[in-house]
Length: 282
Image (cartoon, rainbow, N blue to C red):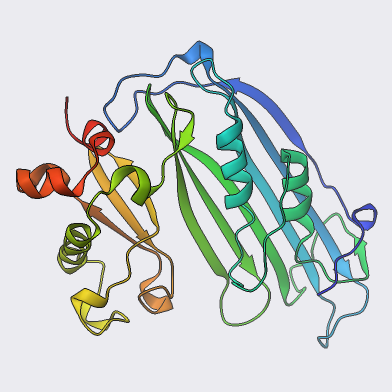
C-alpha cells in the first residue's frame, strides 16, 4: 500500500507527560533511585476513512500509539536503550521489508501511526459501529520492571489488515543500567547453547500451556533457539512468537527456565557470570 502524506491525517489527541518512577524490581536486585529515573508518557491515535476502497464498502483505519519512553535511568542518559527501542518498535512480520532507521520518538510515532495507511483518506473523529472492516495498528510500550541493575520493557505490536485475525508481536528489551547496554540473550547471558536448548526443551514439555507434540519440529535437537526473553523473580523466561514453532492457536509461547534448580555444573557452564549475578539470589 502507498502511504498518505501526514498532513492529510487526523490527530485525535496527543498526551505527553513526564514522570518519575521507582520499583522494587522482580529481579530481586534492589530498588532503583526514584529521583534519578524519568519517563515520557505519550499517547496518540489517528482515525481516517478511505476515500476509495478496494472493498465493497468504505474502509476505515484506526491506529493507536501508547508508549512509556525512558529519558533517564539512575541519573544516566539512556541513548543506547532508546536506539534499541526505536529499532524494536518498527519490527515487521515481512522479513523482506527492511524497517526504516528512525532517530527520535516523534519519528517513531509518525511512522507507526501512518505505516499501514492507504492512499486517499479523510480524517474522521469517530468510526461508526457498522463500518465493516477496520484496519488498525496498535503500538504499546511499557516499563515491565526496574531495579538498580536492569530495566525491562515490554512492547506489543498488534496489526489488522484483513483476514481471519490480527497479527500480534510481543517481545521484551532488557537494559543493563550499569554498563549502558541492551543485553543480548546469547552474547551476554547464555554461554552454552547446547545446554540451553536442553533446558528450553524440558521447560516446553513441562509447560501445561504448550502442546509439545504439535510443535513444528522433528526432534528435540531441531528446536529453534528462542530469540526473545525477560528476567523475572530469578527466572529466565524465553519467548517464541506465533508461528515460530507452533500454530496460531498456541499463540505466543512464554516458558520459564528455573536456573536455580539446575545442577551446579550445568548451570555454571550454561550461564555467563552476568547471568548468574542477575538470576541467582545473592
